[in-house]
Length: 77
Image (cartoon, rainbow, N blue to C red; front, side, top):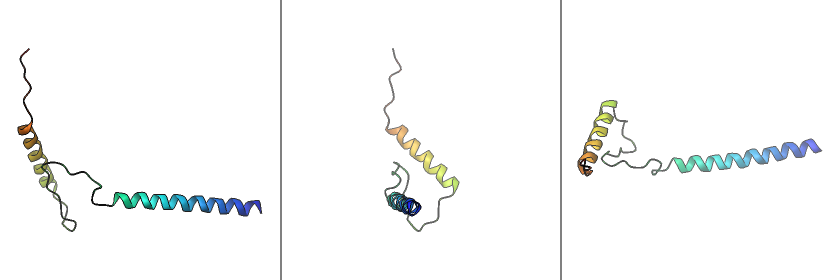
């Protein structure tokens, strides 16, 4: 009898963990899973992934645009 309660309690714990994992994984699959980076174009859901060269170009453009917007520090002391 004691073994039956042990097995049932383990099944309940596994079921609860399974529900929590499923809920957590479902929240990651939403469109807001990754924050948007400034200067990087968003990809359509069905579009093929960008090539590494395109990724490097987008990163370079984002860095250049941020460098142009950032104020230059005053080097005089």
